[in-house]
Length: 636
Image (cartoon, rainbow, N blue to C red; front, top):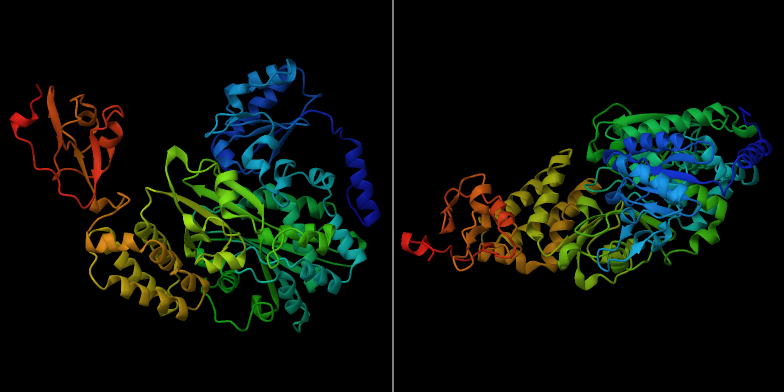
């Protein structure tokens, strides 16, 4: 069946697809998202196809290239269904053993299993891995089950049921009422109630209206929207169509950054297949509802994630924010009512319609419903994408899912909400993760970036890093943002290079509050958050940089020195041989010494010194030992 012209034909098509699939048939799924692709999943896929064919299993075993599974640092990831056997960091040379052991001999390849970094325990099945079993993957879950380029795969897991229900069983007002009842809040950062936003667009006067998917994801370390668009573009499109029907739009746009080629490619294929089957275009499912979508690739400007800047870019103008009101819901693209939601918000819509508002809102807190996807990165054992219920304690994300801080280091802070977010200290790890609680702590939900920091992180330098990013990405339209960020960045740079002075903290606070209150858009208003939160929770670090010219975390390059302890040096020559600046003075049976004038503070000597000696160390704010005399340097 090519064209699907009614709900009955849609269900007949689904039943036909399912009738040809045996749920007990072995299926090898391989994560083919960007992260796994970068670590060689394409080569693994070819090796699997060849090995399955060589063993004569090509009829008995299905092979499916799926979207991102979330456990990105462990890729490429292979999961074998129906058992759910999960192999991590699979390479082409492992494939022969997987096929021969797992399929032929029914044995497990132990070395490819997950091994807990804290306990050493191994997990054979996907659902037993702590990273997965402590999540609630309602939106992200289909990524690991379907080929993002397969219309049949999406139909097999219930695709387009929500669209059919909305078009034939609900009025536009009822659809909006369901979204309002679910209290689905925008996942792009602001957390504005989606149903209310839709209602404003529907009630706005005018026959021409637009709906837009915001996939301009620019936060450092964040890739939730990219992975959803790569792994399940059909769900995003279905959500967009339901929204268009509810609002009264006949045309939509997907604004995606040019740096996401796989997302663009998979989205284009999903649109092509949906159009071929009559689920995009004219008279969808025979309902009389017409809808078309266009893809617009942005140039990667961070500011274009802000909705008014996105609209300017979509119109072919410079991506700069505009004052609100008027809001896009009443006057947006080309002056027409426009609704903009991010990828994750749209992907939630089919869930809301299928499950119903009551069931959807049963998960989460009183004011923040459903789940939220975070990119958990930084100093944490298990990095990747995590989807958790709203209201989960922050500690559970970092320790139960993330596996804690690696290397026995001490947790210091976690930054949530992207470069404009705040840093939360260990004392607040038990707060519930929702829009209000994070804001109270001086951070924010944002689009879902979550960066974990350990004891080696300098909070002054991390603030400087985020302001440097925001300074580069500021469009420069409004003075408070343009000049305020630059001035704060200059003060922080002085602090991290030993040039901080009395009065800097007070000036920094004044600049932060002014920038926050007077900037035009969320970039400027949020830019002081890293500064204000770190000054509040880690003020002693700021004071150490200013008063003592000392970095307590030993990470600010200009404030540290590398020295060699003469009592511990064994003259092994490791540091001498590997120093790229030739800043080590030493020789056979001679205690080695760092020549401070030549040292570039790269840290190679510290890494090179054998752990059993521990002769090289970093110091900050301490006097550098006087050079040794020849007699002192000569070992007995």
